[in-house]
Image (cartoon, one colour):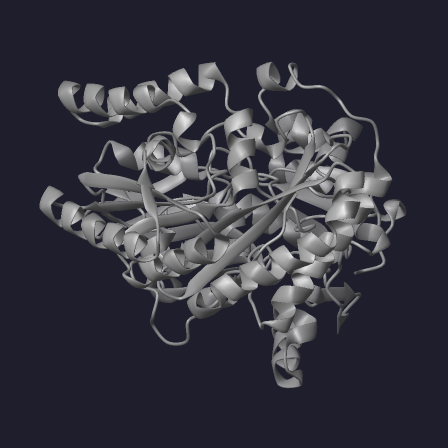
Length: 551
């Protein structure tokens, strides 16, 4: 990056930034800087300042001022990265906090699009749209109570709506981007004078350049997403499988039908953690939301009674479980589709069980982020990859074999592993191993987990030996996906994107970076691209063995 040290952050720079964002938009408080210099997995170099613009024009001014002094800026949305998405490896930069750039700019029900500022959370957007009977096709990750839409566009997301509509990027129409020199680019039909952001494909698709870019090519200021009518009917199903391969194959078979808006599976370990982590108070709140969501007193009491009677006993001895949700404009269509998917699961040896889990998740989509920690206050971190549907089962098996070979080491350090598997339309099979182990927590956990929950959990001392084992296992999982030609969300500074591209693709990426960010100040190091003054170089993607990525 641009070789900037603390000496460059003089009073003149601070005064220039405060003139743009006001005193409420600039901070050099050490506690805030430390908080914003962690993600869920690791700590970066401590930021020298935090700046929080409250409009696109303020963001533009901040970037221009930083570019003039070659001060690197690192964009932070909800802070849910586990891949060093916004962390610096060297001191001297600042964090751009998007929490004030969070308005819903326009809901256009006539033309079926919504424009939001990048710091708007998925929870905020969905709450605003719910009263109008509208929704975006993809409508958020499980962390949507905190995760921002701009962060999702940089990193991409899976989950709500993705089973049919694909990840975040597939719902985007237009973007407003602030380049590394402070210029503003609007994509699609919004790029014309007086143009409206109603259509993405007018000439080359410039929006696509900035989707999944790990925030390396420009700062997302605004995004316009498609709208669809909120489905009026939904149904849920859950199946248990005796073996991993049967569950994995059934997951792919369900995804190929393209009718389940969410498809997700758990292994026995992760299911036990979910059961252990949940509390009676959470159960009661979740049940109340299920009852309220049903649309009628009778329907609500009926579904609530099913969950209450089932309790947690139906998963007490669960093997591998597969869950899915079907939604649509008519009850008959939903029932027909879910019946088709049930037959597929039965063909693969599945046994239908109580559908409490998908029912509760749909009624409580954006819950507090207490699952950032294990049920006994342990640290938690995932790693993931995306492969074709046909390779899902074999990939899951290969990672399982890897973990079996490491099991004695895992046991010695009290490291628990588990899996979440989900699908992306009819093309992507996402396997996400997770690790839970005793380790001290970070400021981001203190700030994100509910205090009432956090206060009940034990605290663990620093445990670098166990964390080094987790880092080794994460790296080995990434190698599995690399060998299989897999893809990743949240590329950040961890997944091997740049180094796995062809020379021609690397050259094009370098050209784009140079044109959009000639000073190399936009999240340098992300996507495997680093800036050194006006000259840009490809930087290998960092892995947990690198000093700057060590927790």
